[in-house]
Image (cartoon, rainbow, N blue to C red; front, side):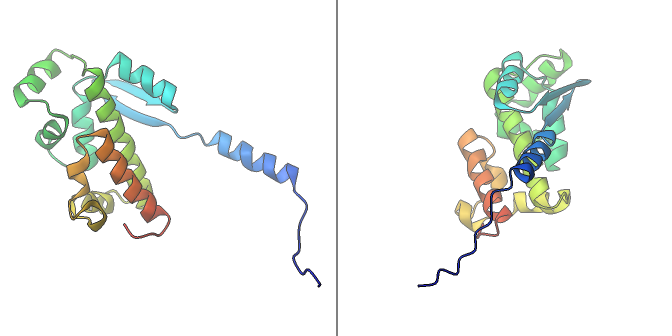
Length: 165
């Protein structure tokens, strides 16, 4: 039998060049609130930001990213309006649970906008439309828990790869 499979030798130089390009383009997330910018590029840095806490003003940043009033974000995070007004005025920090939730939402929104070719309006419309793969519920309704955010990320990943979502 004639084996017609062609094999090519491994190109080490090309592989190293590709790895270096990926290394240079490390993903960084940013969140701005109360005149401060929080930046993280890996899970350990993310944990540091969460432990330090982020200001209540970060909820406004999220509301702008998802194009909804702050009141909607307060409902997602579970913070009463009066608490928000008082804590924001005092420049207080969110607790670690709420800080993690806000960072996760911020990462999700950045990922979603990237999936929709940096067209924020398209992503924001998708976020509010009922989604069959989420049981007919709009993705925004899942942002109140880390597990829900992960489900929405799975949907976005399926879209990224051209699968049903």
